[in-house]
Image 1 (cartoon, helix red, strand yellow):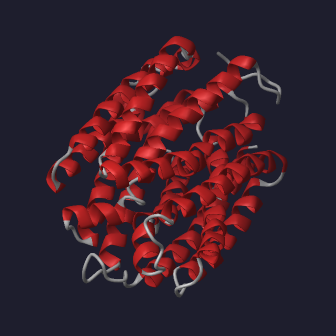
Image 2 (cartoon, one colour):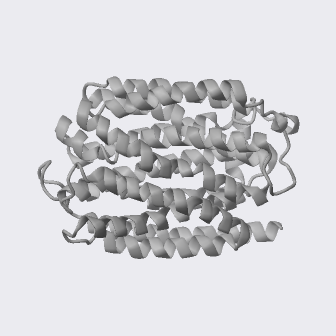
Image 3 (cartoon, one colour):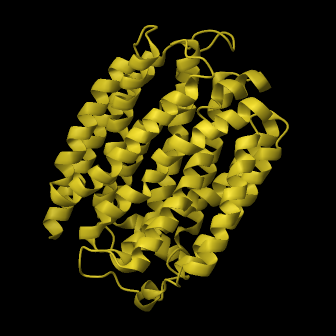
Length: 408
C-alpha cells in the first residue's frame, strides 16, 4: 500500500494509527512501569541502585542487540507478519517477568522481553513511513507516541494499585492480558504491508545491514537518536526512588504524579504533532530541548515541597522531554530511502535502546542510596549530565536538518 498524497486520513489509516498506538501503549508500559516500581522492587528484593539500574538496562541492551541482528531482515518480509512475530515474543517475555521469583530470574526475563519488544517500535515506524506521507507523519507520531502518556494516565496508576495489592509482578501479568487481545485484533484487521518488497535489491541480510550502517547520512541520524535517548532515559529509572525518599512523596501519592503527568502528555503530544507539521521541526525541537534543560536542573535540586508543586515541576519537565520526540523522530524518519527504511528503523531503534541501556546503567553508577530507605544522593549530578547531553543532541539534530535541506 502506497502512502496517500493528501493530508487527511482514510478510515483504514485511522485504524492503523489506533492499532500502533495501542501496541506502543503495551510496550511502553512494560518498560516504563519499571521506574514507578523501582522503590518497591528495590525494597522487596533488597537490591542496590546499581543492581536496579542493570535490571532496567538489561532490557535495553538485549533490545538493541536484537534490533541490530534483525535489521538486515527487516525489509525482507511483510511488515504485518514481522510485527506479529515479535509481539508474540514480547508477550511471552512479559509473562516470564510476571512469574520471576528472584533478581537473577527477572534479569533473564527482562532480556527475553527486550529481544522481542525492542524491535516493535522500529517495525511500527517503518509501517508509519510506508503508509503515511511526510506531511502526515507529525500527527501520526504524535498520536502513536500518546502511548507514553496513556501508560502514565491509565497504565502506571493501575499498575501501582495492582503492585501495592498483589505484588510488583501483577502489572506484568496485566500487560500480558491486554497484549493478547491486541495481537488478535492486529491479526484480523491489519492488511499485509508488502510494497517495500517490490523495491528490494539482491543484497543478502548482512550486506543490507552493512549498506545501511555504512552510509554517512544514516550515521548522522543514528548519532542524533542515541543522544536523544540518553538524555531522555537517564533520569527515569530512579524517578520514583527520588520522589519517595527525597521529596517525601507517599506510595499512595505516587500514582497521582504519574497520572497528572500522563494527562498533560496526552494533551501535549497531539498539539506538538500538529505544530510539527506546520512549523520548522528543528526550531520546535530546540525550544523543547532548552525548556527541558531548564526544568531538569530545577527538578533535580528540589527541597521537600508540597505535592502540587512537585506535580507542576514534574509535568513541566516531562513536557520538555516528550515534546522533543515528535519533531526529532519526524526528521530522522525522512533520512532513509524506501528500500532501506526497515533496516534503518531497526538500527535506529537498536541504538536508541542501547543508548537507553547505557543511560540507565550510568545512572545507577552515579546515584547512591546508603540504605533502601535513605535519600537518593547525586541526583542533581545526574541532572547536569542529562542537560549536557541534551545540548549535544541539539547540535546533532542541526546536522540532520542540514542534511535534509541539502537533499531537498
